[in-house]
Length: 140
Image (tube, rainbow, N blue to C red; front, side):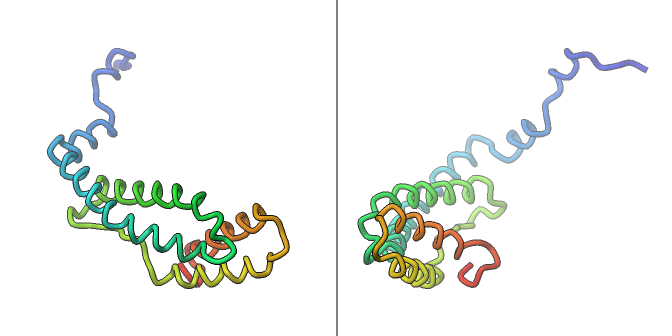
């Protein structure tokens, strides 16, 4: 019975490197990247309009703070689905119907905070939007 030394372990590829080599050959990686770019360009408009809907009214001054995060989240979603999705034709557009419900919740929370500081309004609006998007919540 022999014990494998450190030199033996480095010669064997890890499970992760085998998976990457099998699932992400250069051609598929390029195709996935192209799909992610196209998907991102198509969903960026919807993402921006939904963020503008949720942060309208008294929270509209905070819209520029939200847009960057919304665009980064859309890019990460498009890249993850395109790269790691098991179906080549899978897309993950943002859902527009729950955004109306989230916008109503955020507007209601912002109306209740009319006399508070803008940073408190922004934090409450952001937390309300996040809480309404949790799995199992009515708007999720």
